Length: 87
Image 1 (cartoon, helix red, strand yellow):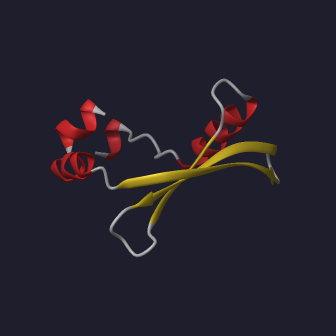
Image 2 (spheres, rainbow, N blue to C red):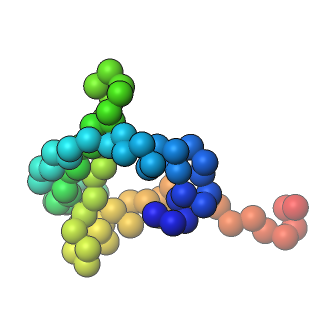
């Protein structure tokens, strides 16, 4: 949290106001065609003072194969390395 408040004046102001409301969690199971079953937890954070806007976060439990599967899928979107010859 300290890094966020130091890096973002907007976050620091929102954090001070405590604009985040109660959260609503749930467990989800997805069946991905390339990696199979992925189990995620979902957190919904209501943002006070808005017209129903929510921050929704999907995350795997730490040290699970679901986390490894998400990391594998994310590797397909990693930027390509730049060769010194192409600069």
